[in-house]
Image (cartoon, rainbow, N blue to C red; front, top):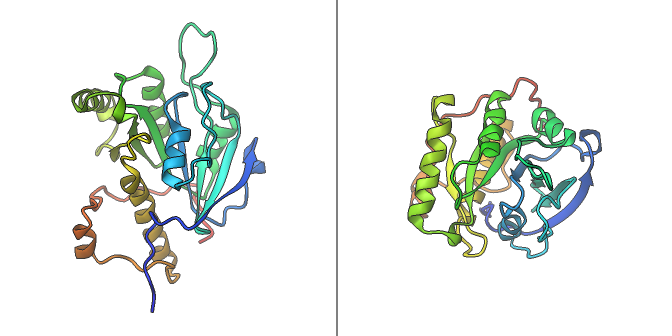
Length: 246
């Protein structure tokens, strides 16, 4: 009998390594899901909430603390990737979109990368460096979803207004907007929805590979009963250099 263990039931979260460049990254035997955002967007707190471990990612009072690409193996099935933040330059007069060479190479050339979770502060109107980063993802055909963080810090009306303003800025670049999620590490909101994105991707990967999935897929009617949304987004095109080993 095959038992279904959903992604939300993470059985283990193990630190793999910190990589200063693409060549130092671990092998590409597991699907990877990367998280990135402007410094001080609450990334470390979010990663700790998703993993269920308070100390998975270091929460620093100094924005821009993460300098290396950090890899964590989750339930021995997939990797969570903590990418350095962008746009932080202490003392800079004007914030500009930029990240280091390692992040650029990882996002453009890592064949095991399945999806990027682009984190945005829900309490702020559209920030130019965030808009520029999303434009870069789109130009380079990197699959991504948008995640608006820290929803506990502001009113729901403010969150919705900022989301609407951001999507208005980017709507002309897409035939269909990328999926949008909200979360709060403090209020423990959004965990199942974000892990559901990974669950859906893993199910598709296992079906495509022809391998017997470690977790049996949930029938559509049962999935609907859980209250979790079934994505209606059209399948993303594979990146030209994609050659996954599974």
